[in-house]
Length: 280
Ligand code: ADP
Ligand code: MG
Image (cartoon, rainbow, N blue to C red):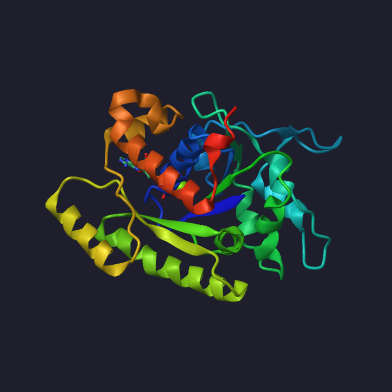
């Protein structure tokens, strides 16, 4: 199992679009994939049309959705409390009908805000703990980070083997990259090893204007691993509105879907996953 985080402190830079379409593409290539929604806005949950299971609660409680928030709480509720592995898998559900049948989603809602603020010793390890011991085959975990460098981002950096920093090629979006990389480097040092590695910076929603080319050149001169850019196309928003992957839009979605499929192939290669062997 390989864990990839899609990160950037900035919002609106196509983190969720990338996490969901990449996860779907990897699943279509034959991998068993879990997409974890780490944003209290629940955008990845909505995009993939994932329906959280509902816990009836006790006689007094209102029915409650089972989400990543519950999984993290159950993994370890406070410092010194016993650690429970595998809790994220207990809240995972299948993605909606338009998505790959091998894609599952650990959903989020606004409850997650409470987890972002928790900083007790061990809090940053809860996601990694919650992802341990999957009950069935699982090749790839994709973490859709929210637009913050708070507790959940730290937890993602502690759980991830590698990170893709998604960034729009716009002047105001580029600032998010160095800060995100700084925290990544801090966590890497704290973990005392090579993880999480920077898989690369992914330029997203790239328009055809000349200025965009300049910004792309700037990215390439600033960072060693700039991945193949995702073109800006109206079909991406259409797909978002339809709660579907871009690949479901056939020819109209092909350019974007192809970029995500190639990125998925690269990720599976880096992860050492050979999904074709597993497809039955
Ligand atoms: P983030 O998760 O970083 O906040 P989103 O993935 O939600 O960003 O994307 C922000 C908006 O940009 C969404 O409405 C999404 O549909 C749109 N978008 C993302 N990628 C593209 C693209 N390649 N072309 C056009 N629109 C895009
Ligand atoms: Mg998002």
